[in-house]
Amino acid sequence: MIRTEQSHAKYELARKYLAGGVASSLRASMKPVPIYVQSAEGARIRDVDGNEYIDYMLAYGPLILGHAHDELTTAIHQAMRKGYTYGLQHEGEIGLARLLTELLPCAEKVALSGSGTEAVMLALRLARAYTGKRKIVRFHGHYHGWSDSIFTSFPGAGLQGNDERAATSVLPGTSGQSAGSLEDVILLPWNDPIALESALRAYSGEIAALISEPVMCNSGCILPKPGYMELMQRLTKELGIVWILDEVITGFRLSIGGAHQRFGLDPDLVTIGKAMGGGIAISAVAGKATIMNLIDEGTVSHLGTLNGNCVSTAAAIATIGELVKDHGSAYTRMERLFTVLASGIRELLNKHGLPGLINQTGPVFHMMFTDEQEVTDFAAFNNRDGAKYTRFAEVMLSEGVLIRPNGLWYISTVHDDKDVQETLHAVDRSLAKLVD
Ligand code: PMP
Image (tube, rainbow, N blue to C red; front, side, top):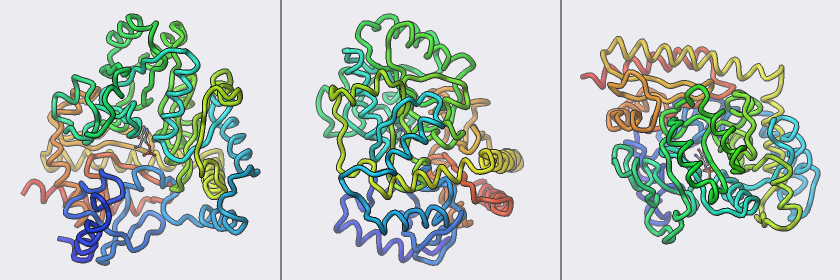
């Protein structure tokens, strides 16, 4: 067992003052207790009880350069010395917007905001304004932030993943969501081309946008079937529907140009966040000028006190600067290391006779305990043994590795072979304990 007295004590104290005891609801699910951090550097994180972990949670994705990265820290300090935010214009916002238009194939224009949730809100608003239509098509198991008009059906958000209601109806993700907020949402199974085509054709006169994660990272890291994204692209173009790829996870993680570059897709809009800022709050909507120009024309409002602030834009420019070095060789390295790690874990699952699998897409993978031979849709994903995985994550902590209790692993540019080998030993010992 790890020492957790200090984390326990701080969590007790936090619960007196901080609603929920944590700053974002999901964090409360960590077992044996939400861990309190002392400091973090590179691929390692230390807690207040003196435990050290190799970190594959990476703050739910943003820390693509790891913790306290030198260049990023310096860029932030330099920016701060000139003032943190002005509520006025500055070169950093132009520099970042220009960089994004150069690097993201679909980006002709860009709008900046603070979180993935806000970027999705803006993208949906742009789509509705552009088409003059109301309905939004989204998919089971995808997550697009927690705003009222889109927050539904995500396992962990009020419903458990194995609760079949999560897979069958458009239910609010939380109590307190405004009544009718999901009235315009059409919820479809993902990776089902027939369901997609028939729904889009049936409702085309009312649909403003189709929004999808390009890889279903939030539920099993499931790749689209061959031709599925191309079908989305073809149908949305034919039917005049705005196609939004939610690249909040995949942007700057699957490649410099995100998933749409990696897979050669041409979405109308993308939302990006997380990895773009390296751990500092920033997000963006990027896409076709014909749609983005609604902001120029004043038709669509895009607001936010801290949008495009100097610290966030400097952090994003520095993070992207690190990622593009040596023609993006960091991506090849991250992918190689994660492939070694994923295949090592698969062998260990076999060795311990534990049925399970890993779905990997480059520098992100999902590990699950399941009897399924493959997991290619949300229904199959829901057959996993989530409780066993949560136990595994807890045991891994005691072996010095921090992973999310839900199965999604991220890697950063500063993880190395030694980290991976150490992690495989930890997995070996943890699986042995699970079997006991
Ligand atoms: N879209 C996707 C695909 C996400 O994974 C997330 C966050 N996990 C969001 C949107 C919301 O981003 P944020 O938490 O920054 O609001």
